[in-house]
Each structure stands twice: as structure tokens, then as C-alpha cells.
Image (cartoon, rainbow, N blue to C red; front, side, top):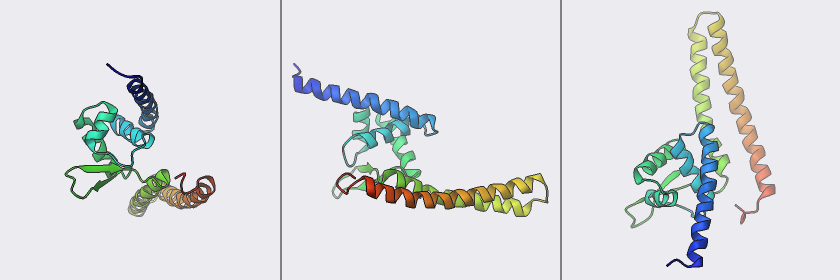
Length: 169
């Protein structure tokens, strides 16, 4: 027999999962693969500091195999980090709880430089013409985007300091 406390926990869990599904869908529509989007939404919204893959699978009510691939992807793209606890045989996954989105965006900056350099190479290799001009414009776009992202991150961090105390996150 379940108690009203058990029912309240189940209701809270169900409400969390409904929200995770909604936010995960927003992330998936923005380009994240579906299962990594759901896992990331869960880690953002749920209160624990870190999770094993088994805990994520249980929390999301999905298979361990699905979560395993999702966390591998999220670690690879810098949205989660993998840590080991002393004496534990399981990997644990966590977000960068202090400035989650600033950290994610910071980790994306090097890829803009890679795009910029690749476009610059094309601009130098190609004979003068529309293709070379487009590659030069592409190079300039990514140089501009990288500089603006750095400026935006500085402004965000200042804004964040004014909005949240250390105990708020």
C-alpha cells in the first residue's frame, strides 16, 4: 500500500519528468539529439549535484544504454563533465553548476576559431572570384562572432554577479 507521502513523491517526480520532456524537446528542436537533450534537461532541473548513468536512467525511466550514449555525447560537446569518486567504480556526471551556460558557451569558442581558420585557408587557396569572396566573408563572420561572444560572456558574467548571490548559484 502506498502512503500519501509516496504519492506526493511520485507526483513531484511525474511533474519533473513532464517538464524535462518539454524542455528537452526545446533543446532537441534547437539541434541537440533527443536523448542527450532529455538527459541535459534532467540534470539542469533535478537537484542532485552529480549522477551515475544508472541514476539518470532510473530518474528518466529509460534504459541504461540510452543514457550511456547520451552522456558520452554530452561530455564530448562539453555540456557535462565526467568525474570519478574515490572508491567508486562508476563514473559520475555533472554540469558546471556555477554559470552553466557561460561555461558551455566558453567551451564553444575554440570551434569558432577553427571555422575561422578553415575559411581563411579557403580564401587564400581559391582563385579570385565569388567563392573566394564568400570564404573571406565566412572567415570575417567567424572572427566577428568569436569576438562578440567573448564580449557577451564578459557582459553576462557581470549581469550574473548582479542577479545572483553565491548562495543562489
